[in-house]
Length: 539
Image (tube, rainbow, N blue to C red):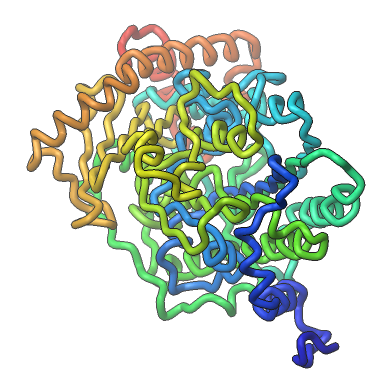
């Protein structure tokens, strides 16, 4: 096979072949990414939302090649400081689809998010003439996720420590050259790519296509039983060989006695307090990066489908994630934390009106996608939302337009694996993290310019900054009041669940994901729950 004079090996895996084709496209075609159809004012949009992708990899990355995301960056724009509005699956996606902060929609945990049928920006696109198609993971409505996950969230105020997750491990598939490890994602990707190539060619209206991925989220750990969590970082040798092991850093861990109390609780419930060798930690991180490489290859399939259909230069293409992945930073894996690995997300745009090769430092978040999507579509109706359109930043409009976006980002968390409602305000180089009612749990303050790894809480060293950040946070959200509302909700939900089980309650609660620890002192833990149900305080 020959392309532009180059001989191609037909045995080259498809993701590699796609990237070669993109790299050898004529410069005039690549430059046309900035050109617009003169007779068109409404544009197609393709959005790919991954799960657990560390946004820092799209800015500073020497551990694994991500050629298709790099392609998007060269011909589009990357937001260097994009954040989730809640570092957990369902609430973060609820914020993205509704354009509202989680405390406004009361999206408290993976079980309590938006009601089915809740109006989203995609509904507005439909009403305004867009053809819409969704494939893969959406996960923004109430009622999903495991029983263990919701009970753990409801009982997080109970003063006990129980391991809720499996110990994080790295694992390889048995097939050395396996490219499609996450088969469900690839199946949905094929559906999306085929839709672009076939269906999109036969419709007269502009279209919006959404593809939701599971990657690079860790895989379920079935050895944990029926209510298993996901603590297995799984990949194949094909992807792992792309990772530069020598560039993988071993995160520094603060001694247990110096850990913030919420961090210690999180580390314990995530089963990360035992000893880990450097090799174990490096392998977990390497496997995670390999999973990110597989995610990138999926983007290659979508880019290829758009290119094959002649739509690449006239379609807005977006890549993001619901949250990040700690991958053993701060003695944790998963998310549920305001540390950068968990809260910092990728956000890359490519398409008409977007100045290429932009690195945008402004602070943005997922709620900004609601007004941005409507702005692209020329649809009005995003008043009274928490977010702001990103188009002034993406199109390099006047400085006055760009300044309409606030210079801060908000994230909040109310779910399991953290024993206090958590609120993060990022402004300039400061990250302020407040908890619960603002008094019972000490806050954290990090200077990300001097301490990018967030190992030094300087709240006590900079009291004026701490006070100022807390005042700003309270002007955005009355977080003590929100924490109290979550506390009341958790108690009521647990009490209702307990009553619904009747005589089966003891057997059911003892068999949840924490069963190994619960079985050691079942009566003690039951008494603690009963005492908590009768208490009137936050803790």
